[in-house]
Image 1 (spheres, one colour):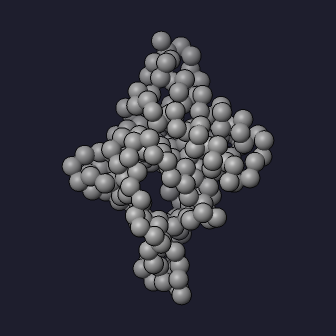
Image 2 (cartoon, one colour; image 1 turned 180 degrees about the horizontal axis):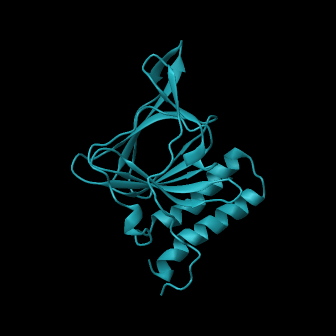
Length: 196
């Protein structure tokens, strides 16, 4: 990854950290965070190939950055053709920005103990951003919109999402706890200025 490419992610991380230093409420985080994320999605030249590799059986979640104070994390989600998540929640705020391909998010809510669709599916194309949180809607299923190509999105969460105890949901509304972890074996060094 060149220095020019590195600076895109590095600038976003620094700007989001500065925003969170102000301790704004969640509505401001989602609004301003989306504005900060948008430029990162406008240039598809900064993500190292190591964090864009699909898996033949399931989606990949690569950690790109974890804030030392656990305030946020940045993750690349890589979807092989036709792959999807189970219905799940996050329990923290999150921003989903589309970088390559497209994905479809179907929201759900618990109603009389069961799981029901909440609104129409939302299709994210490159440059589009969606938000999740317990306040604005936190339960969904996400799928690659394509059966014949890889899609990739950049997710930003209000915690180290790979360490957060969350849940997947059955149709009856039952919850199964999980902690996602990461597909990454190592982190990109976005602070390394020796790349040219």
